[in-house]
Amino acid sequence: MTPRLTRRRRRQLSRGVQYAVFVAVLVLVGALADWDRLANQFAQWDIAAELFPDIITLALRNTVVYTLSGFALGLVLGLLIALMRLSSVAPYRWVATVYIELFRGLPALLIFIFVGVAVPLAFPGTEIPGGTYGKVALGLGLVAAAYMAETIRAGIQAVPKGQLEAARSLGFSHARAMVSVVVPQAFRIVVPPLTNELVLLFKDSSLVLFLGVTLEERELTKFGRDLAGETANSTPILVAGVCYLLVTVPLSLVVRRLEARGRRAE
Image 1: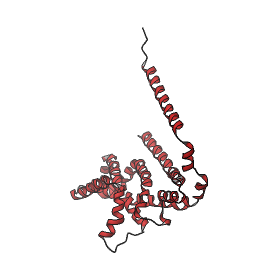
Image 2 (image 1 turned 120 degrees about the vertical axis):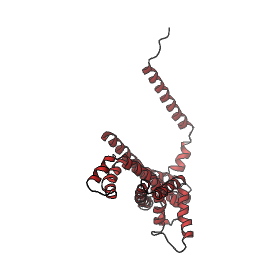
Image 3 (image 1 turned 120 degrees about the horizontal axis):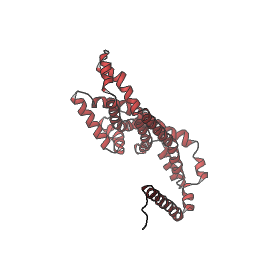
């Protein structure tokens, strides 16, 4: 009579099979890929060397500026919308809910087109301050605010109600108690998801190419596409992708560290 396998042994066999399948897929892909053609199209080091230092001092710098300006606007607007969402005044809640559902439901590309085309048509003779930088900050900020508002709202609601009641018992008004006591504690809770939103905005900044930018206003994606067209080679796109990873990977590690620290604190 064949002995039955223990649960531990079955898990070990299952894990071994999964590893074997994974290695087999990697070997198959590696054997079928045409590495010479890939290297010729994506790994021309002489072309990559010509991208520096412009890809850092111009494209990467613009990408960081676009991201930080959009994040700053989104954070301020998101906090305001979160407080409106929690307000006891019904019209404030309605406006905040409509804003959140609208800007979370629409693709970011449509928001950029709206900012670049619809706003000038709706308000003739008006210019968004900062030119392209202002338009990108507005587009990214409007999108980010909808997501940040829900994150901040969840953080505020996670703060024990006793904190607000204690502040009120000390003579604080409701508004002052929220600003001085509740909101700072909420931000400590929501730092990891807000940092993750920063990573998403860094990638979404590539949508600036749909606004029509000058050579000095190009971000990483636009810079890589332009140089790929000029050289008839995709190496600039690969280098631009590496530049994205140089920023997003460390930020993602920071998010995981913050989340782990929050779990230990709990």
